[in-house]
Each structure stands twice: as C-alpha cells, then as structure tokens.
Length: 95
Image 1 (tube, helix red, strand yellow):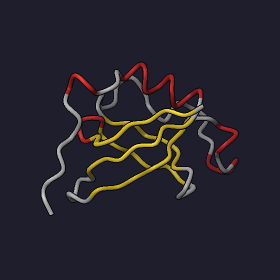
Image 2 (cartoon, rainbow, N blue to C red; image 1 turned 135 degrees about the vertical axis):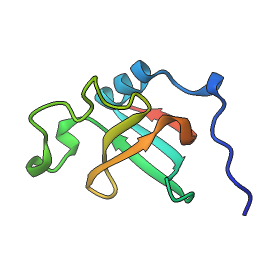
Image 3 (cartoon, rainbow, N blue to C red; image 1 turned 45 degrees about the horizontal axis):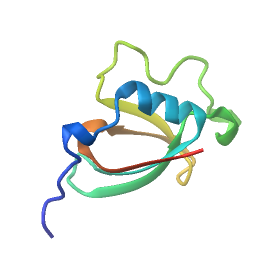
C-alpha cells in the first residue's frame, strides 16, 4: 500500500475553524495514526453526544498544549481520542 498523502497545508482547516466545527457539530475525518495506519473517526466536542460519565470539567484542549493535536470525543468508539491536524487525509463537517 502506498503511503497516504496528508492534505496540503493550503487545504487544512484552521485550528479555530476545527474548534468551531467540533463545538457546533460533528467532523468526519480520516488521518494517519502515529503507527502509520489510517483511521476514520466521527468527532465532536458537543457534550450532549458524550457519555455523561466522561464529560470533562475543563477544556480537553488547553491553550498550552501542542497546537496541532486535538483531543476529541469519538462518537463511534464512545471515548476520548486525539488526532494531529498535520496528518489529516480527509475532513468533512456536518451539523
């Protein structure tokens, strides 16, 4: 299998836009994991889509963390996961 090519920098959504989308709906993404494999995920930060036992008291994405890494709620896995924006292969927002 050929190495997947991440989205070019010009096609990457901004950090602010990703946060807006995560707070207002769901993003469908495909990205390359650290081990080199591809992963698809439906992600959100909307608390009504989360298991109430796992809703954080503070932001899962503090301003002092790595600016390319997002911690999100994975709707399919029903748990917290993270992804690196620089490894995105696909990005789609839905409300």
